[in-house]
Image (tube, rainbow, N blue to C red):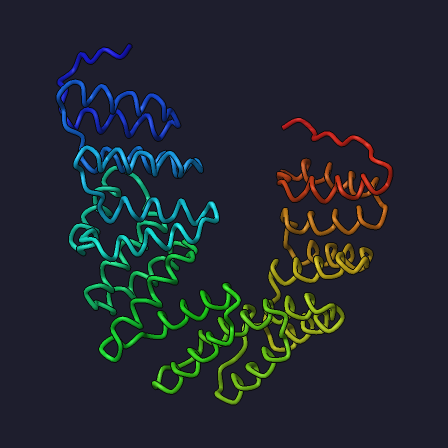
Amino acid sequence: MFRMKIQSNTATFNIMINVLCKEGKLRKAVAFLQIMESSGVRPTAVTYNTIIHGHCERGRVDIGLEILDSMREKGISPDSYTYGILISGLCKRGKLEEASAMFSEMEESSAAPTATAFAYRTKMEARGIDPTVATYNMLLHALLMERRNAEADRLVEEMEKKKLAADAVTYNILINGCSRAGTRLRPTAVTYTSLIYGLSRRKRVEEAHRLFRAAVESGLAPDVMFNALIDGFCSGGRPERAFELVAEMERRHVAPDEITFNSLMRGLCLAGKVEEARKLLEEMRNRGIEPDHVSYNTLISGYSRRGAVGDALRLRDEMLHRGFNPTVLTYNALIQGLSAGGEGDLAEELLREMWSKGVGPNDGTYIALMEGLAGAGGREVTAPPA
């Protein structure tokens, strides 16, 4: 039983519940909510949002939805932050239809006034909680509802600076915002680039291409947008279209950079044209562009997938010689290639090397190793102690 020996008010309970959720003690957090109510202290939207956020962060979005129902039964209306948390949680669980339905519900409600949305971000930051993608989705939605496109654009730039990857909800918000406002809302280059990336990642590259053309026709400089669309064509297995865009880039005096070349190499590797991709590495250097670890990992993965592990290992050595430390992606690609080629001993040796270098294996590492060893007769593999 919990015994409160301090003044029982909303702020006190909210602090306790926040601490418990941060520590992952969600059952105790819910118990405190019940104590709060039985003590005659009325919970607020902040109380419920904290508990919903705690569950969604740990993949328990179903419980988060149950808490939402309880919240409504108590007469407390969900706000834009509530919706943002749950939409993000549903997307992470792959429940995109439910996320879309909740997004529509949020649009129909009065839950997204801009002042409220930004007030929540201020509260989060004051409590030492970094804004998440869900937070930014809420803010973008609020701004675009009020046709404040320039501010929405700056918010997208802020996300990029903070290395926060936009999700499906972000792109839906941006697409719906632009279409809703019609000619009164003029997307900027940043917004167009985000939309092109979003459409491309959802295998809608032709729509992304039409959007790219619309941006160019509107007079916007397409510099950054080129890379977004090139990446889309390469990821979609159409590197020939990507090379056409590179030619157009150069006609417009936009120089390809390492991001351009990395996308092209990935596209060629996916198409099984690893030797052509290897030549691009040399072309990068000839143009004064230094390959990075992404360049090497892309080629190492390409060679490993086609069984040319010797070439992949030589690239790993070149990578080291040029001052790049192998990452977990490097090791996974090599282990996958060695295991598939029946070189289980060498694959296990690489696994031990990972641990000795302080590179922690992930699920992909063990899956690659186990599959290879199973094909070779199935030996037991144990991870070295941390």
